[in-house]
Image (cartoon, rainbow, N blue to C red; front, side, top):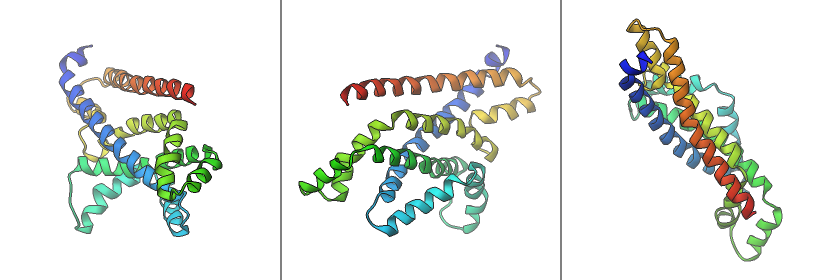
Length: 215
């Protein structure tokens, strides 16, 4: 409790930056993952190949290497430069979107083929069938695994601490430098993550219950 009283502001700032990382990367991952899922089910072979290549590459690359590229290798290309925090958001987004894509694609596969055929029979094109008929049903079908991906994203934000991003994972080395015991800090950080994960779980159960009745 002493660490919480003395360094409560440090922990609070760390969790605030963790939440910012999570929200920005979460929105980016959902958008990019949806685009990738669209490519994966596209009738155009070249687009399917692009989507498949992206997912295969990112799912088999450790998140640490993705961070390493954007923090250390990308600046040497002398293109558009951005701070460590923005690099962390981009790394988390690019990495997590591959998993969002696969979860959403599994949801698309649960939509009966007759739904797409019915959409085409009334004159809807591929994009209209996907956005108006298939994707809404797919998102409903994948709420539990999608929330699991987002929870994994929340925990993955701690990787950013190893790349000079001031989030809650950086509190431990800070306390080490201050000569404070870090065991209690670990406990409070774990409690903080538990508090952040519980609302996600409640939202998942709420949507799951509501949409299961609707189906």
